[in-house]
Length: 154
Image (cartoon, rainbow, N blue to C red; front, side):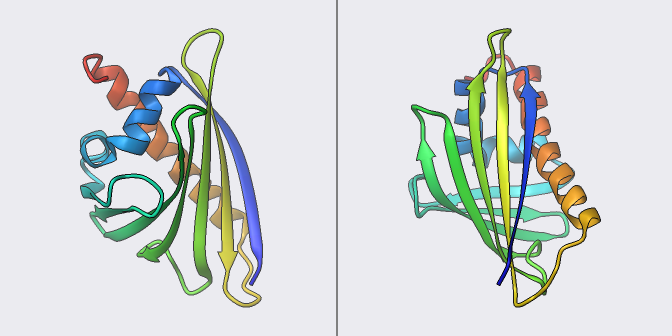
């Protein structure tokens, strides 16, 4: 098994506490509203904390996220995807690590590390990594856009 790691930073106009709540705690409500053409439903099995499973039914498959870390005080959220249509013949699992930091100008900076665990000696192409990084950033951007369009959501 090999591990390939990518990192990105993403500027967000939403305060870290509000974005963290939507991503970590209110996921089942926000994600289908933020991306209705892709996400058909989302549910949490468990209390939302470590060990919980977040099941997302997509237009073309599904994905299960196992919650690993929820640190509300420091806005740190980690989960692992090891089941679903995004896991391919070459991947054993994918771990996502998010850290939200307040931006002095408002909003926050999202720091995301993605670790891809490959099966055997499988290799991942730069194009694969680029596309998956863009998809991850797109999900986050969609949640940001939803929160900006719905200022009453807290």
